[in-house]
Image 1 (cartoon, rainbow, N blue to C red):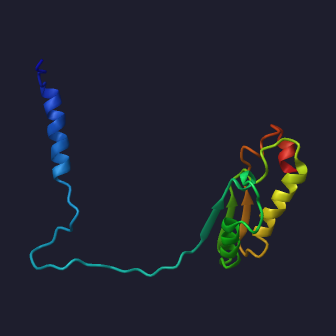
Image 2: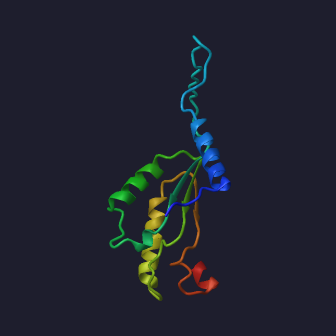
Image 3: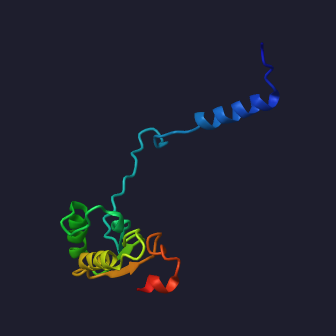
Amino acid sequence: MIKKIHLKDYSRFLIAFLLVSCATYKPQLKKGEQPIIKTVQKTPSHTFFIAGGTGNLKNPSLNDETLKLLRTTLDNAPAESTMLFTGDYISPQKDNWEKDSALVDLQLQLVKNFKGHTYFIPGINEWKSKNAKKIEK
């Protein structure tokens, strides 16, 4: 069975073909003209570090390779930095304050020598009680 090609289908194909065929990945220069390449050496004015889900680690400790790297990086970070814990920095189990407080202490140990600002944003694990007052705990 032969399908008829409608003008609408043909025009869509033609527009797509023209758009793709007009793309170029090389600079368009006059004959003999050299491209201008600018190298800019700038230092960041502020650095952000973001971590989340540390309460979901099987064996959370400062000996964990990822947490060691984060701690070393934070220890060497400038004062114009921000560390943002994006949630799930406590365990997902309800009424497990002993483990949860140990996990919060772990986060605080990570930023102990950090010169920048530190913020904690509650995640799913922090809202496990569905009680805003318990989040403050």
